[in-house]
Length: 305
Image (cartoon, rainbow, N blue to C red; front, top):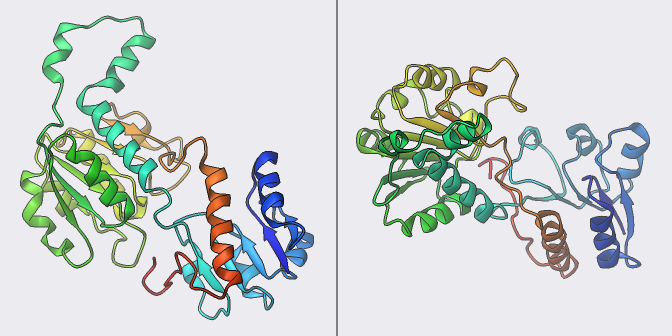
């Protein structure tokens, strides 16, 4: 059997694949590149690791299993007829994204972002900044999404004795009841038909002036124009944004220069051992595949997760 590795990795990670797969499998490394010659090689493979172009999948008759290199399913929700198994990395990034969420909140609450800017200017403010600080302790938090990220974030916040409510697809209709008293609104939502544009101007206007908005899910969940206006007018404390509507964020976006915005550039899923642990995940799933067992993280494209 042949395995196609579409994702670009460091050589040490390629070697990790080789050690785990050869000589049992013929392994083809595509380095994430897209060309007709690589497409032809992909079409001869039984298994693929990585987010290959959609048109490659539409023309494949050999593929038996595709393991995505991501949690997100874009653009594979456009697939209508396919015979292969499809799995993603659902849950894989829960800890890392939750830690970035916590770091972002604390950075804003304790003004680490502002103190960093002052340091670059050799400017000492000192005592006056103390009265602008906030405590996370016992804050009222609403988390949208009950997946690995949302639940891990709730766990981390428990150390600060936060009063945390998690809303999922079954309970999110209650959001308006919570917003007026919410200190921190955290979105960890996947992209589905139901979540696109969910956090609209009406909901954002319900937040109190001291509220903080955090988005570590998908940029499409938020009406970004409405959010920018609210931030410009300082109607809320600020926003921590790991994701945006367009990525990379266009240079002309106002979000770059708003002092009450902290951008983490869709980096929250990362950590030093991320790639190596992805290989371990794939090899463990491959063992299930070889035994004819159910794969971990089988995707339901209708649901979007």
